Length: 109
Image 1 (cartoon, helix red, strand yellow):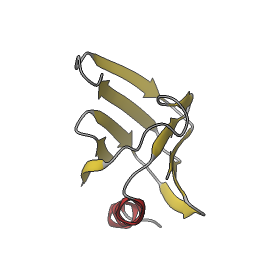
Image 2: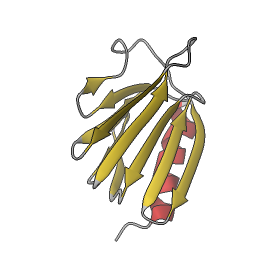
Image 3: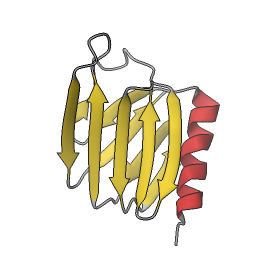
């Protein structure tokens, strides 16, 4: 069984090795494909939650995240009960939220 400490270790290792990357949400790319390099600005585990913040503006809140793995150059996060993507627009800081009940979140260097 993968512990939350293991999950955080995999996520941190990927960001340490790559410096960041593009974000693919369960419904597709965030922004133009291969155009953005998001950096990890906060990572924390809470009971039943993993909080992953990018660029001080994009927050992914995973409930019961069970799988984080590195496949080739990709970081893949899957097997979660829910993922809330809470983000603010660059520049205007207008807030947005999307909730995913299934799917896969990928990071591409």
